[in-house]
Every structure is written in C-alpha cells, then in structure tokens.
Amino acid sequence: MNCRHIATLTVMAALCIGIQLTPRPPNFEFTSLICFLSGFLFGPWFGALLGALTMFINGFLSPWGFAGIIMPFQMLGMALMGFAGGTYRKLLGNDFSSSKSLNFESACLAAFLTLIYDIITNAGYAVLFNLEIVIVLIAGVWFSIIHVASNTILFGVAFHRLVKIIGSLAGESL
Amino acid sequence: MKETKRNFIMVVLVWITSVFLVSLVGAYYYVEFQKEKSANTVYVSMYNNLLKNYTSLLQNYTKLLNDYNSLAQSYETERQNLTRLLQQYESCIMGVNICIDYGNGTILWYNQTIVPLRCNLLQATRMVALVNSTYWPAYQASFVDAINGVWNKCAYYWMWYCWDEESKAWKYGNCGADLYFLSDGETVRWRYEIPNYTG
Image (tube, rainbow over all chains, first blue to last red; front, side, top):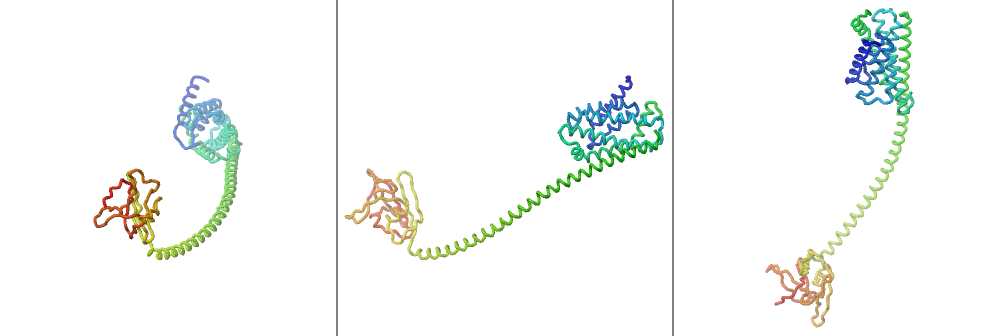
C-alpha cells in the first residue's frame, strides 16, 4: 500500500465516520455503499480494510454508545462488504456493460451482503447476551428488512453513478 | 464471467435473501402469535376469575343490601317507639342548668340537665356529680359535705345559689339543697367558698 492508497483510505474512513455520526433513521447507512465502492475501485483488501477501520472507529464514537463485544462482528461484516466490492470488480473484468445491468447486480449484491452483515452482527449480539441467534434474528427482522431494503435501493440508484464519478476523478475510464 | 451467468447468480442471491427474510418475518409473526396466544389464555383465566369475583361480590352486595334494608326498617320501628316513649315522658321531665364552681378557677356547667319534675337540688346535683351529704334530723334537711371529692375543709364549704331573673344576680340558697325544689329551666350554682352569708 503506497502513500496515495493510505491517503485515500484515510479520506474514505473519515467520510464514512462522518456519515455514520450524522443523525439518520436507524439502519439507514451509507458506509456499506462507500466500502463496497472503495473495494470495487481500489481492490478487495482496500475495501476490507476500510470497512474494518470504519467500524472500529464507529464502535467508539457511535451515538448509540460503545459497541463493545459486537465491534469485531461489525468490523468483520463491513470488511466483507468491502472485500465483496473488490471481488465483484474481478468477476466483472473488463465487462462493463450497461448501467442498468450494473445497477441491478449491485442492488442484488447489496441485498445479499447486507443480510450477511446483519446475520454476523446479530450473531455478535447473541454471543454478548447469551441468546439463541435465531431468536435475535427474529426479534430484529424489521430492522434487517429496513437495512436490506435501504441498501438495495441505495446501491441500485447510486452505485453506478459513483463508480463513474470517482473513476473519472481518479483518471480511470469505467 | 458472462453477464447472463452473473445475472443468474444475482437472482439466486436475491432469492436466498428474500426467502431468508420472509422466513424471519413468518417466524416473527409465529412467535408473536404464540405470545398473544399464551397472553390470551392468561387473559381468559383472569377474566373468568374476575367474573367469579364479581358474581360473588354482587351476591354479597345483595345480601348486604337486604341486611341494610332490614336494619333500616328495625331502626325506623325503634325510632318510632322511642319517639312515642319520649312524648310520654316529656310531661314528666324538665331541664335545669347546674354550675359547679370549685373556687380555684375551675367552673363546670351542666346545661339543660334532664331531671324529673319536682326534683330537688340535691337530687339534681347527684345526677351530674358525686355528692356526699349528711342528713340532719334536727333541721330535716341534708348538708352537703363534698362534691366530686372536694370536701368542706377549714372555713371552706359548698354553698349553693340560684339565679334570680328579676335582679339578674345570684342569690344564696336559704335552705338545705334537698328542700329546694327546682323548676323547669332554672339555673343553680354550687360554689366552694368561705361563706359570706348575710341573709
């Protein structure tokens, strides 16, 4: 990782934290999109590192209080999100087809990855309070639905546009 | 990877996500249903208990009401009897005001004391206080030795007065208390004092 990557990572992490700390409806967040996008643009490990770093800092600064034992699970979930972005880029290769297709695929991936993220964090909650994970998942189903739906819409609407904008800023032609 | 294959994978992922979430929603409603079902059982049991208690309360209330009515009827009958009795006795009684002055600042009033007609002062005083007296055959009258444990001592004696409505002043009693017959509404006074009898 060179200086440019470190600087980008820092800026992205700051952006994520800034948005995370902004008042917003519960489970409506932009961090997943930014991490996925970063992974997509700068590689899977970059995305994973950004996701983990963001959730690590968020664990201390979150308005909901110190994350505690759930923090590693959040870090893991968000790292997976960033890593998935990079992997998706590898799967795409140079096949940058229509924006419709990219929007659709990113929305589908967002739904699935958000669900995985929720399962991981709920598992952390279950471990923390010594509960059965199924019970925790059932109890938090409406939060999961909001999370999945909001991320699906957000990815579907914004992902392709952000890829184009940031790509052109970085000098890539996507 | 080809676009069609990718799209297929994405559809599968969405399908998995949807199925998972729908299952969770189903489970959520099932859990809620079970909770409500058990709560409903509790509510039904509570309702039955409440109904039982209410019925019992209603029965007790009816019984209480009957008792009360019976009591009220008895009370009314008794009140009528007593009113009749009082009317019979009203012609045989009178009210007098009796004052007992202990001479030390303590003055007790017994207003509207009910006494029999043609009652003398000694009898009337005995109705409101503990009186010790001695009968003197030579005078054919009683002499009061003590009232409520306060005995005649040294130069102090229990003297009685009657209130004179005309002169608006107390008048010394001029005979033994058992020789003075009271009239209805009369005011009399006992006073523990060194007599200053001039009459």
